[in-house]
Length: 208
Image (cartoon, rainbow, N blue to C red; front, side, top):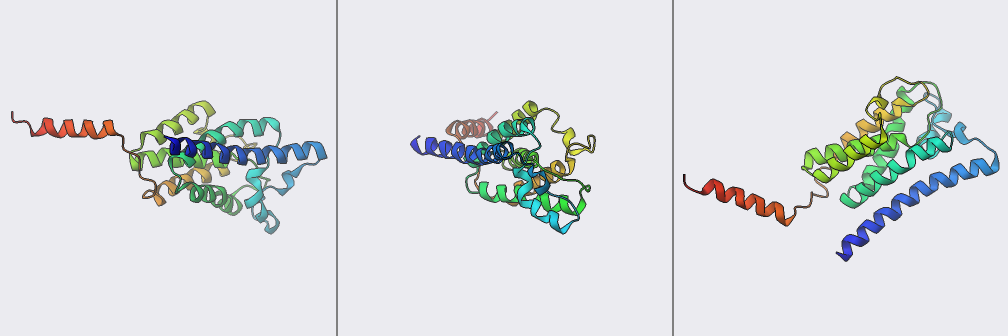
């Protein structure tokens, strides 16, 4: 139980630390009176390549950052807690890979925000749950999808003010990560599941 508590606490610290960094950057912008959006990802330009690293850290305004903060915390806690061996690999994949594809195929505009991470984390958890038969992941992904609102439509080019490209490539990267790391962190099997399975086998073996 102590190990589980420590693991859960660590997942919270890691998630809060990352989101705290996002808020520090935004507060710096406000206090210094600067706009760092110009350091976002701008497709097809060599100077825009740096945005692959910086874009997820930048947000247009406080409301933009607020809308992303809770989902990032919730999802990253779930990934670090449920999939400790996969979590760093998943984070790096979801953080970097979508930016590469946005730079290659995105519209000529500055793309910023952590929403691509949200789409990547949701799709990783959902499809990991399906592949591994881990109901915890599926439940967590569905809860965030329900609370975040309109997340499914975010991968479509319905609003030019939103980087649907980051959403789309984030979601696809999450799906690929779920498949790529499917053999790490096998789903925990609880005692009651073993009991149900044994009862089912006993019932089958009973003569008619």
